[in-house]
Image 1 (cartoon, rainbow, N blue to C red):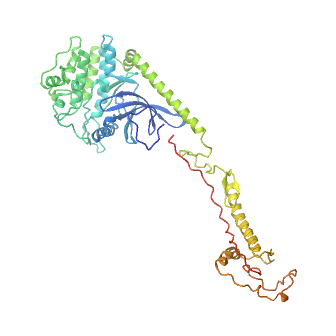
Image 2: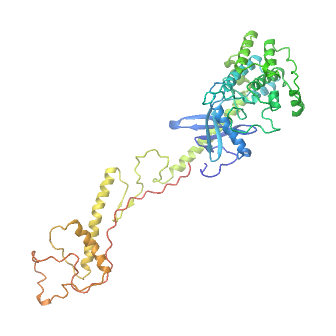
Image 3: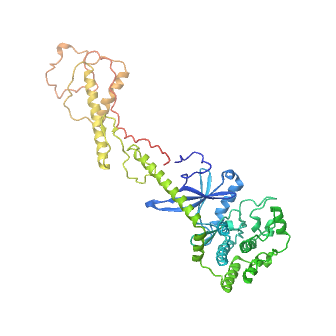
Length: 506
């Protein structure tokens, strides 16, 4: 387990906790960030799998990457659509920035295409059109996002590609990764000169040359995905990135699609890849409607359930491996929990967890020694505790006074009986207790009893006359006063000591 307050370990490891989230196993890594499968645990046994995205260690201390990361969470959290992966939380734990997203039990479109290509096949056109059409729905929701003032944020994804389209086992497409998205009030700085953000094979020409972009750059990217997976090659490709950029920015249209592609579908693709962005579909919603119409007119219709069945069939091995990895990570997490429980069980009975929510728990935990020399155990309830405190408060002073009287009486070598007189007021007790100390500090003086004639002294056995003046309680007996330390006043009852609690970070 991790002791909080120490620097975060890099790379992150299974079992590390980011606030409420426990990392289980890594599932993906990109150029800027890493994605983990994690579990969120709540009360009453509640558990939920989530995806945790963190900045790669080599970029974690870079302020520019931190701004981009924060911007992604701030911007994308406002998009509410079934075809956009939902952002659940943004946190900073010991300097580790992280984004919590909904867990998508699926794979990127690139993985699906790779699995199909390994069998010398292609993704069925109906399945591809359904995935891309649903992606357009999520993309339009992002483009239409508005700020708190109600004005459009003019959001542009700028990295729409098969890598950032997930398809889960149920056949639902999810657009992800708004890390380089452009928005009106984005705080991160724009691209530096000579640096391109995005993937060249799906990048619009205006984006490649650094010109201002709008939502129609994402429309181009949708067309490039369709072209690539319908023809088997990107619309513009070269032996190097420089050669690809040259072909992309020359202004010539891409080669025609294979004749196996129906004309309605081919027309949509070629419209999206127009160098003149005014000739492209104006919005992702318009493009989605065109794709749906082409599916109906050509009979290339696939439902979400059919897409899910195809994904499970083609990615069965990957799904099984991912499930096994997550199950193993969960088993390891349960083992860590049992170990923590065992360690907690052997802790002293008086250890009180700082997370204990039972504020009514009695704070007494070990036998406590009070100021009068009595040892008592933990009271069972408040009434008993109050009674014990009251008894100690009464008995303590009485015992102290009695001890003081005995010491005072024995100071002269004789035992003097306490005169039978009415109870002295409360102040007399205080005076009696404090007087020996005061007299010890002052020089000793002969008392009246010491200068009296022995012959005229009354009989010691005779009962004193009640009418006679009673000597003050502070008077000393006859004879020299021995040097002895005055009795200490009774100590007040001390409060029960509560053991110190050490937080081990569990």
